[in-house]
Length: 90
Image (cartoon, rainbow, N blue to C red):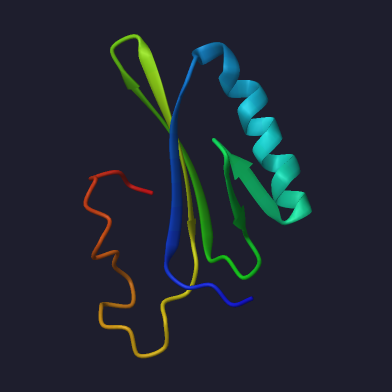
């Protein structure tokens, strides 16, 4: 199945959970499907996968973003993310 655009999953984690989370994501990538927080993302044909952790006070927010090619003829600059306005570098 050809996918376009991007898929993002965000959820809270504790600092103690982070090493196991990163390991699990790696194992799931090898299997071709990332399943987090009850959502599954098939990664066949992906352009990039970003994993970010953001600390806000004593909490952490994990975000996994999978980007796929833009739809043929989609408006936008080839090198920019017009809808990625969160200010992160991923």
